[in-house]
Image (tube, rainbow, N blue to C red; front, side):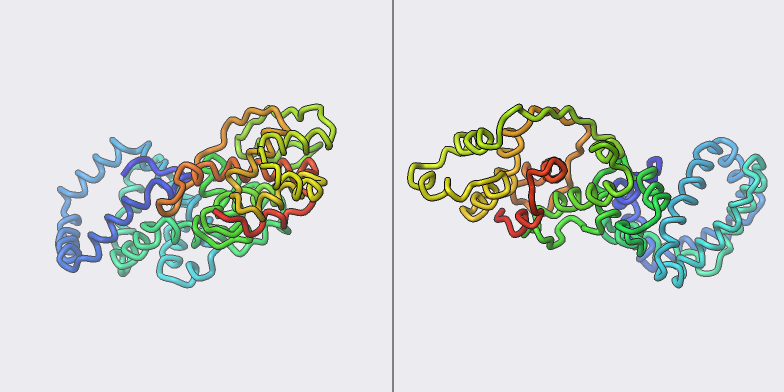
Amino acid sequence: MKDIKVSDFCDKTNKDFHKYYKFLNNPKNMKTIYDFMQFMYMDEFKERILDMIKKNKKNLMNYIETSKTLMKFYERNKLIQRSEIGTFFSKFKSKINNFNVNSDKKILNLFYEILEYPNLLSVLKECFYLFGNYRTCLLTMIPKINFYKCEKYQIDEYVKYFHDNQNMFVTLISKVSIGDKTPWGSIYYSSAYAMFETLNIMERYYLKNGKGTLSKLKISESITPYTLSKKTIYKNLLKKFDMNKFEKKNKMENILSVSSFIIVLKKMGYDLWFTIPLVFDTIYKYNFKGIQESKVIGYKKIYHQKMNFRIGVMCYILKLDGFLTNTNILNNFND
């Protein structure tokens, strides 16, 4: 397996863990492993394992430290706590918290203590099943923390470990997974909504003088509003949209704000991917860096779905600057 990072644990390792689960789920393979484990107590094998520990000590220490951090997140799930996995985590953590990592023989002893753990293969199979599915891996990591009302140190911890994987981070904070039904309507907007909700939550802890929230996700922005009157903004929106004469005559009187323009386009059947960039490009001169591509679901509008985090950020900035008078206007958009 490649190096395990906390920030992309569910994202990058789930395929590997799924393979391990399938292997252990085969009774013939389980028997082979049980038989092989008997030979591992021979002195010759112990010497070989000790030699492997010496040669790979740095990597082993990284795995142990990463495992400790991951267990900290999963232990917050009460279902995990009560399961065989939770019992295994607790025992393993107690062994390594005050562990002398400089002693190769102590590492070897720890290896054999783990090897002797009751029903070890059964527990590992359960772990691999849990971690082998991206959605399950994420959802079981989410604790029952109301991030809207939590202490700052609690959200700080998630920002610290997951900020550089925006797909995992927005799911953990917003508790909205890719493909979930959201107020914005289509399931294809789920990750855009998750980003928007995440930024609104983070605003409570990090926003200072209108800035700071995006930087916590390593998103940098250069945004300058065009020096235009509101009336000019509305006219420019209509020019860019290029309504036909009938639509202009019947819709113009309803467009008294950016919000009302968005509502009109929504009623006319336009999607968020068209509407929000149109509005944003009219109001701002801007450049974003650090917005990652969103995961996608299904085969519909793949390119647009990948831009969902960008849509979520745009909606957040429009709200922050007062152009979205009520965020409910984003609800129930067509796709």
